[in-house]
Length: 318
Image (cartoon, rainbow, N blue to C red; front, side, top):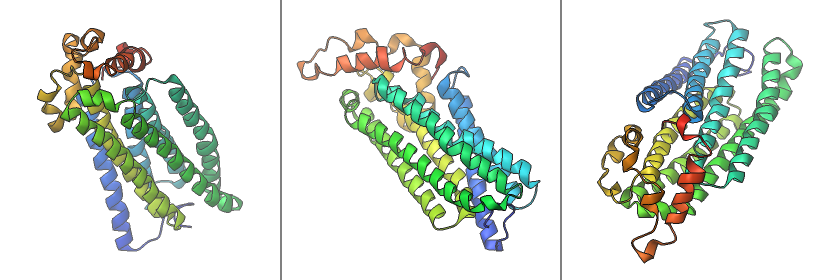
């Protein structure tokens, strides 16, 4: 078996590819960690902790898989740590998207269904796969075939989950959020395009990951997976922060915010330090022009009901 039950025996070129992918994942993780600790003013809130846990999970999964594949550490302890890192990496990233869902929609039922989906998939996909994986690495070879089958099922299940989340972001961005971002000018349109592009890229990356699994390349799939999740985390962290800035910035000044293009990861600190310059219900309500009368109520609703009252603004510094 190609790494399911212990170290892999591959050619030198194959080993170099595996090591290179692991190194790329670690580099992306370090980039994300630096961005997290230089962006957040206060280290608390669901978004901060889910982002931090998912990022550390990628690093843990990467390092332990590398040590296990090249027999640099005991096999079974590494398997346990691989599972822990896998939980944090996969479900942690889903919670990151859940924690920022209020930026694109104010419908509470969407959030409830997404949270239920994440919890259900954790129980139905993580736990059985873990039992089978640890079983075959303790010598229960009768579980080899069930593991190979369920490994494909869980990978497809998590791909469907992330596709649903990406589709929800794209749909809400192109319908309910688009009129608001149009008020913000070219910067708003750019953030909208970036949001759609990032979620399309996430779906394509999941498709490429499925391809490696269903072509019977378990060692490549487990090596490539941390790279996929690190790329998605890096892109989503950047675009979600940019979206937050756009939604919370006064439309009259958004055209002058050129910093958003160059350094989205620091932009949100401008409004968090001075709330008086932000878009509040008084700045978005009654419109000066009759051509945009249908928009302010939606933005006001997002500000008051969707964005912060449901996520407790005091606990979410970004």
